[in-house]
Length: 222
Image 1 (tube, rainbow, N blue to C red):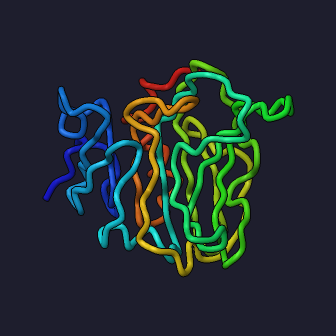
Image 2: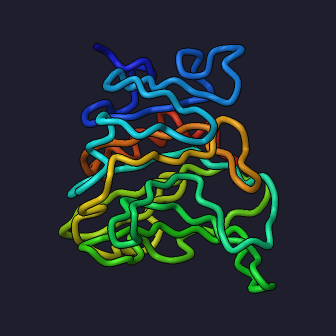
């Protein structure tokens, strides 16, 4: 069955896809929900979470993954961090992936700093460079995690690589089929996820750039 996300985005390996700009995903009157338009498992995002399901088996014991999202920073915070996209495990070591959107905690000057973390190789570690991007209020960016267990994680911002590869090892080894957290389609205090795609493989550089050019580029606000 064809993905409902348009003809030009990369579809091979796409396992979960939400998009507030697509009426198949975000029809009028649906409220704080979005429909999965990957046509793989059809899991609905509701109240900032995608419920635990056998359809999320790909989100544990991960050797390769790509996560691509359209993220808006809507306000500042003095909290330590919020997590626009996350899949926690029972322990940090079994956590599959977490996007950190840091705050100005105890006046540390880190508001808007971005970082990807996970239980990688049974150890809690960064899987992209800390501070690969720093968002200010009102910005809308395309953020991508491109990950391989052998070479680690590469962060991308608005179609360009941000820093070098960091980390290594299988992600979320021993994790459960717990929820995936996504701050969309409504803002969760500091952050708003307008669109997000999960792939069960590592996209090539050319594929990430293709997705940026055909979908994200007109929507970003820098």
